[in-house]
Length: 444
Length: 101
Image (cartoon, rainbow over all chains, first blue to last red; front, top):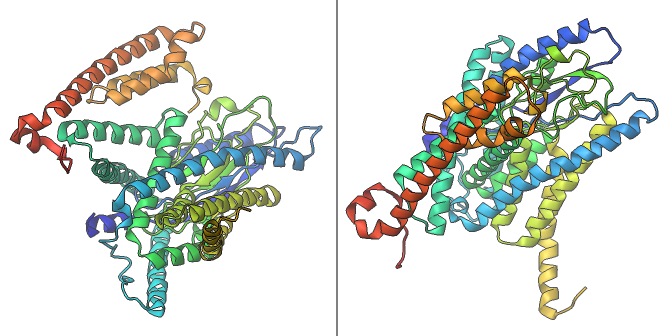
């Protein structure tokens, strides 16, 4: 892939998406207020939906976890929350695991992604020296540059958002999703076919890519079956993770992961959006349930503000905020993974349930997959599995915290920290241990 | 999207839209249309727009199966005869396998 491609990828804004707290409205409150808020949000959602499609490089990490707060009598609030929260945690496991499995499978079979022949223009320091200290400062410099680019993009996006240039943002998102879907999947297909030595002719390829791309655009940006939407989002996240793994030098990857887990520059954007009480970008959000009213669980109506930031593919500053909200998203469709069907607020004034779902930003998916993919590229399955488990544990913990604190939380730090700890720990300690055990034929 | 929450006119609109888009060489869209609206067209109790939806679903299904038959024939022909076609086959090939057969 040429560097210019990488550049254009990077031009997308990387933002950390965060889910903003929605407003909680009770059922019993007057219908006019919720309706207005909902309509307002609906329109902004619509706008943000269209602009929220962020396809290209970065996935924004917007994670919103919504705990369902039920005000029904008979169950305490906390119990309800934990119960529904847990259910949604499980529901998030599947897509995250799927994404990671796709990335790991590709890395193990296709050599292309493990070979470093080109670097992005954002990482000018190539770690080719053999000394550790040189590598270390190169990695640090690279990650700083990346973070700076991310911040720049974020600021840009914030400025655009503040001045309500929705059209620009929409256009940007659409273009980036288009490019991501077409160019990256084309390259991916080419590499996979080459790895398996399967011949393919141009006409068939053209038809397949055209169908795949257009379907993806329709499903992500407009309306389509939920499963398909989720599948596309997972695939796009996996693609981005693969691109990251390929194009970042070794130590830089780890450094970037470490830095990202600590830092979160997109708070500004989220807070801005929160002030405006709008939903910023419904891009890159993966919801675990339908956002419709389920008559069995009706409690308060909340109109959540969800902001998702888009992150460019190369620079991902993902902050994931978990938001516990009841989303009354009637009309939401987000770029990346949205598993929420949208209803129509107008007709659901008396809707009691709100979507209860946990929203996870796409950037989170990407970074988790990058972590696991990198671990698997060294060929050791122990480390890969360890990282995988670590990330899932981190996810559980984050969701638990989300249930307890009930506000948007970044989803990256805990999982990534665990992942990194487990990775390095396993690599240095457990693997040699297991190897020598196998050598000596000692079974524990 | 969850179809059960969408009003009927919207469903018809979606179905029709998907059907029309499929004419742009997009059998995949037709397949998705047929599968997605299958329940709506055939398994739900009668409602007003259902007749039209049925029509579109059937036409989408027919269209996509024609496309798939065409694609399958072309792919089989290509894969089997690629080596014997010589230069033309190389010219339209995207990936040429390496190694000896």
